[in-house]
Image (tube, rainbow, N blue to C red; front, side):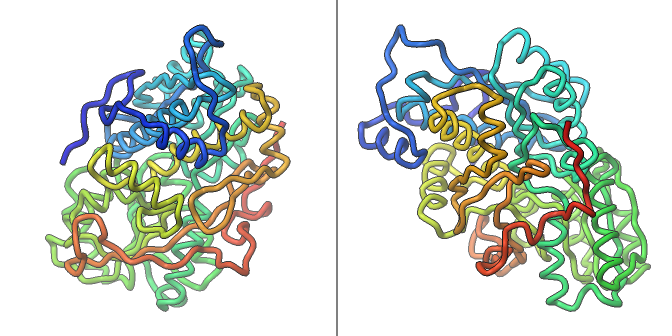
Length: 422
């Protein structure tokens, strides 16, 4: 069922009656006190939310907005932050130029205390250039490029979304276990923009370290809808593995057409979003893929989030929804702990290793060297026609890294991706 329409600066449609039990439960989940918000108290805490809601990343942006709305409504129902309600100012980032323009407007005209969001690595870099210049906090919830944590890192930018190295090392562990790396030939398809180029670089490094090689790699324009020519190339090349370094609805179109062509070479991906697999359909979704979170994770906090999201939007949340929801929770928790909305105090608090419940089996924290959130990931395997329904279309590994490993085991090392923060 389609979700209700979106509107700028307004909550998503859904239940409007909030009981005392729901208020207390939301406050407990966030670690917040629950004073009443009354008319005449301090002005709202304004947070800017920028993410693509149109174009090839639009399906992911829709989940991001819905989750951010849900989190803010729960926080406000539980008493807000320091007795003040959060006001979310939402914009479609569209492309890097528009993202930069809207970031400036949110900061200079609307006086937001921070900006949250984005999915495109190119647009995230454009936003970061604005927030660095103005000293505004930017929490990236969807852009993966290692460069944002390396050559383009910034003191005022933090990353809830995993970096490409974490995705590659997570999926890579599963592929090594399946014998699909050493001595094997990969045919890869790569999104032709900043994210894809960075992901290909990281994938090549992984292959060199583990004894594999590329049979071919093809750059794919982000607006390409017909993969038939590329699928004919794959058929002729007869690779041991087909690798997707694609993004957005490229992944959906590729999976659908791969199934239609009847190709049987194993498939894997280094970039992945559950919504794109859902859009392809359970019969078309096959292969091994990495993910930061999924709706079947069995922890109390994860189950509660999934239940709330499903009640409101009539579908489960996907991993992009997790990123924006968690970012809002981290902000609210940290402001409450510090009793301050000062961005500089938040930055120092996070750099000192503050811990956060991320709805997984371990708490996470921002690594001081590059501001990447350290947390568990998962490798999922598509079930194809064996899937029991339209949502539960894969089986998942346990958390990666495992319980006996440090969370940084799958992150880029300083030698792999050096950040020199001003």
